[in-house]
Length: 322
Image 1 (tube, rainbow, N blue to C red):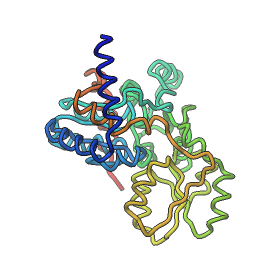
Image 2: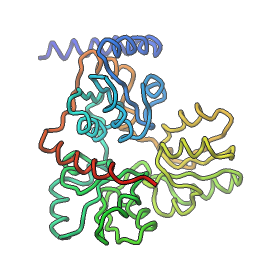
Image 3: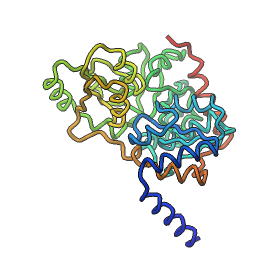
């Protein structure tokens, strides 16, 4: 075992000496030979987004991968995203290049904790944000995304819902529905870094800029926003808007795509502390090469859990769109 670990370390060390262009060439050859599709979340490193077949929001990526003829899914994201791909594509091999890429917010709700809360709220359905584990999805009634949370809550027949795990998304949803929303006390540490005074300062310095924020931001920040939406929603909103300057309230990875798609527009980050998700930045081109060569680490959701989680996702996907 020690010899294998040493060999693996030597291979990775050698790959680390190669340029991005050489690594990209290697990835392109491997993806073809392995019949693989590479997915990258909008918060990934610039070079990872550049090499991906598809960039986007977590669930949207899994849906697109399920429609493809690829046999292998390389998911450049975090653990729950790869689980979602496994849920929707049980016949494909799902690879998470960095097995240590987790999500602190998803970890803020466990199956045991949720079951206990549900027992205290009989008859109250659980609306589960897709930023959660497969186990949590499997004991929830319906899933939601940051884009459709309000529609999902409005779709359930009960007047009260429990929303997990993001309290900021829950509080935002509560403001846009007549239903009572009980928030779970979880949050995204990266979006929680954004402060009201920082946004007010940048807005004052740039009075001609529109402020676009992700609903994972704190409520006070969202009150200052001209538009609140998901990352994919930001890409669409900015492209269609006649405005030329935008303050963007989300993780900095999205700036790569915003600038690439809108070279004539200016994008400003409002946070002094920089909103960078360390887990989203773990995946490197070297990790993608190794994942394609070894076809591991594999993320596979156990079938009984997968079936229940799939039902929660399916109920969401069956809701008519506006």
